[in-house]
Amino acid sequence: MIPIVSRPLRASALAACALLAGCAQLSEDGGFGGVQDISAARLGAAPAWNRTPEETRRSQARVAQLLPDRRLGSADDAVRIALINNPELQAAFAELGVAEADLVQAGRLPNPGFSFARTHSGDDIKIERSLSLGLMRLVTMPAAARIEARRFEQVKLQLAARVLATAAQTRQAWYRAVASQQGLAYQEQVGQAAEAAHELAAKMAERGNTSRLDAAREHLFYAETQARLQRVRREASQDQEALARLLGVAPTLRLPERLPELPAQIEPAADVERLAMQQRLDVQAARTELDGLRDSLGLVRATRFVNVLDLGALRTSESGKAPEIGYQVDIEIPLFDWGQARVAKAEAIYLQSANRLAAAALDARSQARLAWRERQDAWQVARSYRDDIVPLRRRMSEENLLRYNGMLISVFELLTDAREQAAAVNAAIEAERNFWIADAGLQLALGGPVSAATPQGTRP
Image (tube, rainbow, N blue to C red; front, side, top):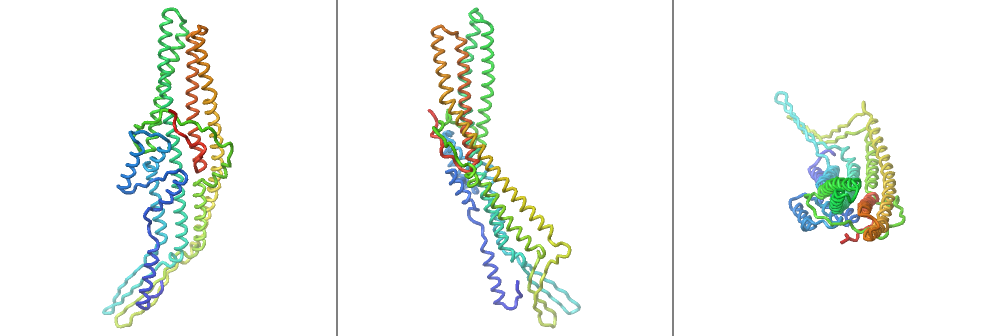
């Protein structure tokens, strides 16, 4: 701050300070619009930040609209609900407010300091007044604002990545819950058939129409079926609970009876590494962090010797004398601390961030490759069950039924074939579930959707 020598100059200085201080203001949405734009572009749905009771009521109304009679018909609807109602996501959005507050604070002028001293000796009174401003803070304010602006962008990218991760987790949870429910319904049918076979074998053994070994075999299959039914029922309940937690709703959801149809074809090849490097938000956030730390390192180096510099106006009044007007300078003398430690710390943090960016890029490429192969393999397995294994098992069961009607095989051979068919159907359900889970995992690994695997709906 310059010495105060006249009232017009004082007024001009105060006006300039007020103007500069007014440049940095908190935004209405806290920077959330950027997160919404990224999410909408990649997911086709935007999150909501429920900061007021009115916003909370709107989100609850939207959840009720997406859950008519507690029906959750698609993974897309599940994602839309999670983006506006997931409690952990709502808590994470508050990080935006912290980052924006730091950005605004970095753009605010430091408050001036005022000191007043009064001394007397007999009838002589001396009054000293001073008004000072942190000049170093004022000089470094543009650089500090740029650093905080980069950090604000980094937080927005990190939160957008969190939104994409929540969407992928919700999709996977929905597929697991539907598959568990589908498997449970089929296992209940298998359990009823196993119970009937066990009762039939027991009666035939009592009458001597079959061996005790065959009866024991059917009894064992019935017991194993009941144990598996209990396990599948527990897994279905756990999967629905996991889905409900992600949605932020009660676990009383009504899901489709079957998984969506497999896509007819998927891409034979793709440059997944390039896509991951272009689209992954965690890589972009790490790159933004590195850029911000580069600026921060430059600022630390520039202020390593002088970190405190205050400039102020001074006015001294003394009895019987004319007022004295001047200025004062407070400066930190680098006598013991030459700033080497601060520079070394900033350099270490910068190097750490550079290595973190390299690790993020390496992980992104590796995860993209693995997720792509997993999705390709899962689709091949699921298609094999759909097109070959299950139809062949069905045809074999039909042939065995004809042979049984022709008294060419026994009832127990027919039951054995039914058990093998049940195992094939259970494996087919798991294979379809694994494909859709892998598809959601690939979307997360690439940082964007995979259009070729968009489900066309559920089977009737």
